[in-house]
Amino acid sequence: MGPLLIVEDEVTIRDTLSELLAKDEREIVTAGDGQEALERLTEVPRPCLILLDLMMPRMNGWEFLQRKSADPSIANIPTIVLSGSGRPAGAVHQLAKPVDVKRLLALVDQYC
Image 1 (tube, one colour):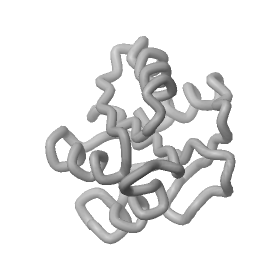
Image 2 (tube, rainbow, N blue to C red):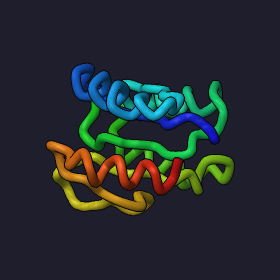
Image 3 (cartoon, rainbow, N blue to C red):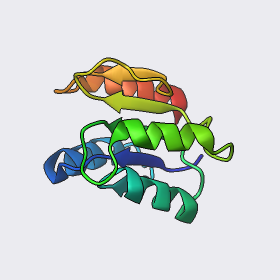
Image 4 (tube, rainbow, N blue to C red):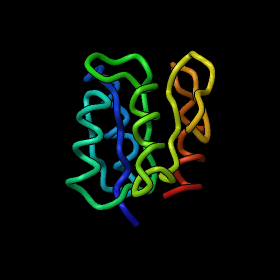
């Protein structure tokens, strides 16, 4: 199974999610914005899941989802949006912040 990609600009949240999700021996890859996430997708094995913040500098989550959807090689990677906004097109689930840890772990287990 491939790594789990966490795309979050807030270092504290990114680190907390990484620690929480790495406990089950999952490989975690992180990115600080959508542009960095697209770069990571060319460097690492195909992720089993992407956790995506929407409000980020440089390239936000909405633009990332548009670019991801336009690229057939990554378009079907499941993506969970972590935001208080509504679920955008291209996301399979949306979790409001602060994230319900039990729900997050259940969703991650479903895809990874």
